[in-house]
Length: 123
Image 1: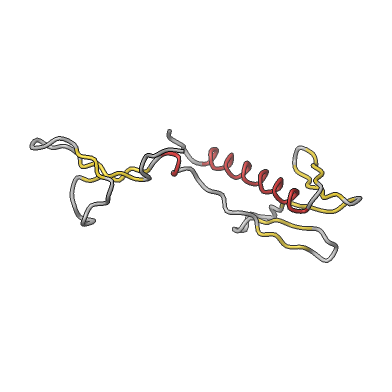
Image 2: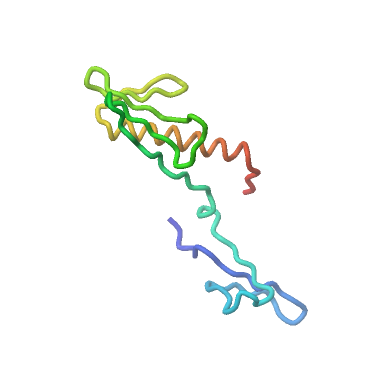
C-alpha cells in the first residue's frame, strides 16, 4: 500500500517559474500547462468478471461480458466435485464457488496476456 496520491497535475516550468506539482485538478479544463499523471499501479487494465449461467443439466457456463466468439469457461459436477476444465487440463474443487474462482483466474490471466499481446504496454 502506498500513501502516494492517485493523481497529480504537473504545471510545467516556463521561463518565468519552476515546475509546480498539485494534488488537485486545475480550476479550468483550459488552464494551460498542467498535465495529469496517474499512479502506475492504477493504470493496469481491469478484467470484467465472467457472466455465469446454469444450463438444464447443471453445467455452469461463464462467458465474458462482451461476446468473444464461442469463448466459455465451464464448471460441471462429477462424483460430487466441481470440475473446471481448461486448456492445460482440468481442476477439481470441493465447491461451486471455488471452481468458479479458478475459472475466473484462468479467464483473467488469459485476458491480461491477450492485452499484452495486442497492445504496447509501457512501464
